[in-house]
Image (cartoon, rainbow, N blue to C red; front, top):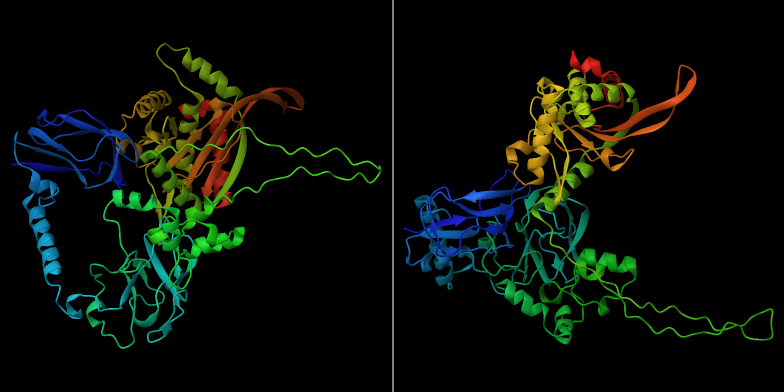
Length: 558
């Protein structure tokens, strides 16, 4: 019996994956334990093995393609087996009987909805002229919204363009306008309530229409979502979207406007256009039915008007000044779009969340590294032992965290979690971005153990061989750019940590020692702290302790 293999969830934060490479081809024999493909997640590129034996009958996601978790990845079964039923979606996602039954129930329910076209409003059929409005997606990262206030109430007449409500998104509170005429028949989300995108927000239609069958929050087939008209033609596939985008400009221009000449434009795009002084009549929309959206305004370039050469009179002469020659560039503006990797998307998401939620502040201190340089030279003179300055910093941080547990915390809305263990993450640059492998129980490790572990993790990070477990569980993070000659910088906290240390280069410069100017070697380190958990005095005391360890490495060997 054929088995469906879906896109696996290879990390706790993975939402979609990219098939980096298929290691078997369609028609190949597959044994349990064989590596089917290399899959790029939000953290690393990992090998995905088969748990079944048989023949690879179908590949659902090609190399380089991105797909969400649980989408059809492959089908394994007996050679020559008919899998047309599975390709039509009649099988389960992983071959289990429970999911098969669930799928069949979903299919039968859809068939009932389709065949029962003559039912009344109680069965979910949309009465004529009624429009269902769902919670709109007002930003690219919005997953849910809160109705801050309703500007209309049930029974009010609504005209196209009227502001229905103010909706609080993950980025701002925005006005949401109506795209329909009629009466506000029902409000599905009250003021102050939060709901997911596409949840029932309101119903608009002819006054007195019975919409009791639509108030349960289940959006019937054909209902509008985020302001899209129920009877508007909707693309059934990416190919149809592409065909719409390639339609003639004259047709798009007609789609962009309603019968009364009003332009279809999102509220955000409209505001940006007003700020930039852009005439919406000259903008070509790329949204549904030619609707103008944010990216259309941001990418809009007005047509260049011809510039003539002018002769400027010279007030100090009876003769005209020589003509001003206009500059005509010989080149052209060229952009290349490179698809963001899953790692790059994850970095953007996590660091943005940290920067915009955690109130960062920064403390910088300078350490005398003369003793550290001498100690490192002595240690590295021992055969088969190599210790870096970064290893010394990691060890010093672990010991300082023991004395300052407030820095080794995590902020939760109702509580502050004190980590009784110390696991330091070390930021490692890789070709696709940045990963943070973790040294569990760092305070229990010696300098040489830290050095060996960091080297091993860094090599495997660059080879994309780290497991998700090796990149999770940190309580503090160290980021070092000293090897690039960077003397001082600040980092974004690696949540859920409360702090991250930025390490600069060791520089040779004049310093004052015992009243005399001598040549010294110093290094600046900057501590970024989450002010919700770490106060300024606490951060300062941590840095003082850290400096004592760095300036006296022998104390770290005790």
